[in-house]
Amino acid sequence: MSSSQVTRPLGSMVLLDPETLPAGTRADFSFRYLDITSASGGRLKIPDEEMQYRDAPSRARRIVRNNDVLMSTVRPNLKAFAHCSLTEGNYIASTGFAVLRAIDGNDPRYVLYALLSDQVARQIERFVVGSNYPAINTADVKRLQVPAHRPAEQSKIAKVLAAVDGAIEHTEALISKYQQIKAGLMHDLFTHGVTREGHLRPSHAQQEKLYKPSPLGPIPVEWTHTDLAECLECPPKNGFSPREVDGWSNLQVLGLSCLTKDGFEPNQLKHIALSKNAFDSLLKEGDLLISRSNTQALVGLCGIYRDVGSPCIYPDLMMRLCPNGRTSSSFLEALLLSPHMRRQVTGAASGTSGSMQKLNSRTVRHLAFALPPKEEQERILRAVEAPKVLLDNARKELLKLCWVKLGIMNDLLSGLVPIARTGDMM
Image 1 (tube, rainbow, N blue to C red):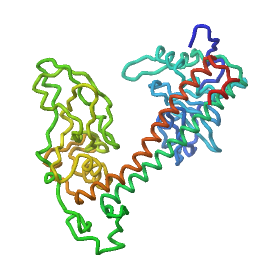
Image 2: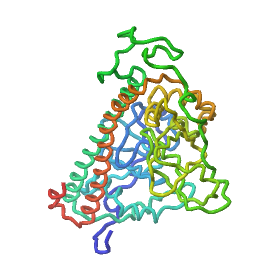
Image 3: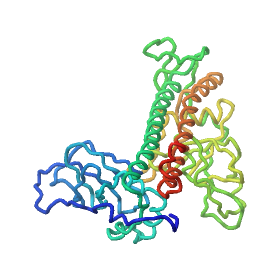
Image 4: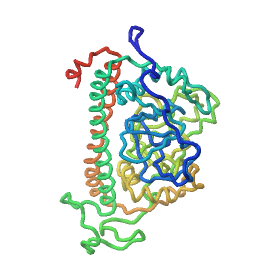
C-alpha cells in the first residue's frame, strides 16, 4: 500500500463479533457449525448436517448472518477467510473466527477482498503474536488499514473480482471433471487395454473369450501376469540420507512433494551439502522414482525425473526403479498411478493408522499386475495422454487466472487503476 493511498481502519467499516450465543442457550438448539476448515481463500464450505448445542464444541459461539465475513484470527496467514452467502437457518462460527458485519453501506465482498490483498496481509503479519499458535487479536483486526473507496466503488470492485472468481471456480470444476474422466479411463486401460484398432477392449462381462483367468482375475489373453521384480534390471534402490553429510558438494536434493498424483513436479528442491559418496544417487533424465515413505494417501506415488538444471539426487524416502526391456519407465509410471495399482500399493504399505506409511524394497518388487505386450503398452500410453493434456491446459489456465486476479486486486484496491477503466482489464 503506497504512502499516498488513502486508507481507513477496518473497524470503521464493520461491526466485529456483533452477536454471541448466550450462556443460557437451549441444549436442543440446532445450527450448522463453521470451523476453520469451513473457510479457505474467500470461499465458504457449509456443513451438510446440523448439530445441537449440547454436542457442539465450546468454541461454537459466534452468531453468523447472511453477508457477514469470516476472518480466521488463528494462523491468519493461511487466509481462512470467506464471505457468507447463507440460506435460512442458524449458523454458528468458532471463536477462532472474527465475524465482520459491514455497516454504513460498505460492501461485505469488498471487505473480504481487502482482507485477501497483499497490502492487508503484510499488516496482519506484523500484528500476529505467538509462534506455536500464531494469532491476531480483536483490537488489531480493527486497526487494519484498508483502501478507503466509497461504497459505490467498493461494489464495482467486488463485482469485477467476483467475475474473475467465477472463472476460477469454473476452471476448478473442469479440472475436477477431467480428473474423474482420467481416473475412469486409467482403470479401464490398465484392466481392459486397447485393441490394434485403437479402441478400448470390451470388458470380460461383454466378451469373455477375450480374457483368460489369472491370480488377479480375468485378464486379456495377450497379457501376462507378473510382478514388478520381473520388469526391473535390479532391485529398487533407496536414495541418499542427508544425515550422512561428511563433506561439501554443490548438489540439489528432491523433496518428497516432487512425486505427485500426476507424476514428477520439480517442487521443494533444496541445495544441500553432501559427501561425494552421494553421487551413486545422482539422477539422470528419465529415471523413475517412487516414494517409499509418506502418508497413506501419498505413499507409493511415482514420477519420471526431468532435469532441473543442476546435479540432483533423490532422498532416502524414495526408491529408484530401473525397468528392463519388458516395459518402459513411462508405462510403469502410468501403471503405478492407475487407480487399481494405487489401491494395491497403499494396501501393501506398513505403519499404524494416522502415521507415516512405509514401503520396503521386497514389497515393491512383489507388486503384481497384468502386463500387456510392448505394442499395446504404447497404445495405452497414447490413450492416457489425451486427458493429461486437458488437465495440463486447465491447470495452466487456472494459474493464469489466479495471477490475473492478484494483479487486478492490487490495481483496483490501491487505486492504481480507477474502477471506471476496468473494462480494459478484463
